[in-house]
Length: 171
Length: 102
Image 1 (cartoon, chains in turn orange, cyan):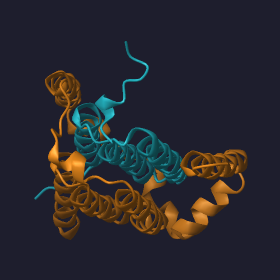
Image 2 (tube, helix red, strand yellow; image 1 turned 30 degrees about the horizontal axis):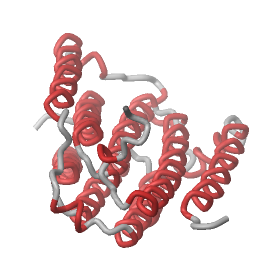
Image 3 (cartoon, one colour; image 1 turned 45 degrees about the horizontal axis):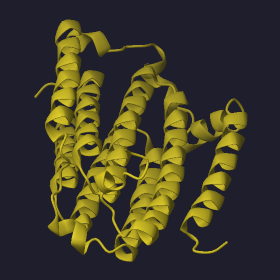
Image 4 (cartoon, chains in turn red, orange; image 1 turned 180 degrees about the horizontal axis):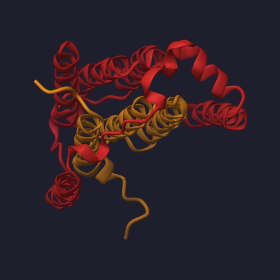
């Protein structure tokens, strides 16, 4: 009961924030709306017992990426862009394409019905209680997914070097 | 009120994905296009977490961590490119950058 109410609250936060993000004129307002949307997604993680990702979402997205966005918004002069047309000339084509994809997904849901995704596996019954969420993720991440983890660290190194090279005036 | 199933999360994720796609396809401001890409990646994460919860298997959450890592790298490089672009062209509107078009 409480879960249902919380789901609808967080879903409303997520979707309202997302719609405001893509429709506001001022980029700072867009960033604030995006923060609301990301916090809604974080609440959805918490509802699904993904506590570690809840923390990661808030610390990394809201604390890291959004601060980066706000810094760039301050560095780049957006006043001129805010006065101009906000949507490009092909917005009707874009909307039509997205509406087609949306109709396709809606038809898929209609055909399958909600029960098609109602997975009731034996593992879902009582497994995660023995270990906490963070311990489960750590065990899997540092044993089974060790190589992808190292590749991800290499990716982050490349991204750090690349963004410094891009943003620096003279190397 | 009936209980929330995996299908609810999948519909929410589909809606968020479509909103993000509309943002990428129709906005002119590059900063907001990058924000829309973040929305799309969040929709993917909701899907992964919903199935992870449904199956009682933490692998979906690990994939979500990798998606977040990619989102961070993408935002850092994208904003670096944006700063370089603004220094050279004095614009942040995507359809005014048409140097390779003729």
